[in-house]
Amino acid sequence: MAEISISDKDWQRVKIKLQRKYNHLTDEQLLYSQGQEESLINKLMELVKRDRTYVIFTLKKALVDIDNNRL
Image 1: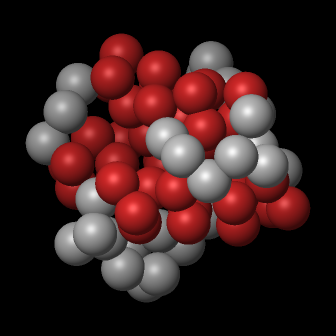
Image 2: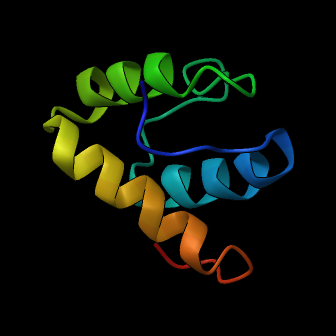
């Protein structure tokens, strides 16, 4: 089970932050549906070539201040 929960509404903001930090990520690569956090984490681990802990940390950081555009 994933350690985080991301709503579809929040995902739109998180996706923008991820694309700013990792400008090689496309909208198609970042497709996500609420409840699919585990799949998202695994996909991001491959796309950014980082471990699970880093990906979860990054997602949580993006969610903490959802209105801030920085990651």
